[in-house]
Image 1 (cartoon, rainbow, N blue to C red):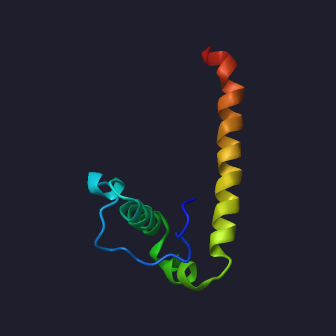
Image 2 (image 1 turned 90 degrees about the horizontal axis):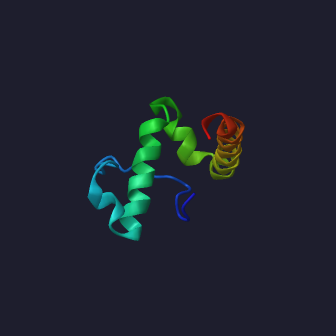
Image 3 (image 1 turned 30 degrees about the horizontal axis):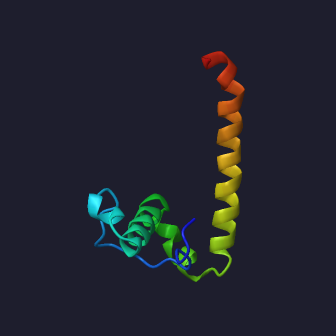
Length: 81
């Protein structure tokens, strides 16, 4: 998770799929923030912006999900290879 992502602020004018979003460090941060707003339901945007622990919970949950995905890949690796 990039530094400076939390607390998030809306980036409605940013297209996270544009190549320019990845050209500079600030553009990367803006692109990630725009993508975060695209995947989180609109009804949760205010909570995401105001809840002080959102960053911590998001980072923890993301790490746990990465671990689950890697475990599934590891379990299937012997079948694939």
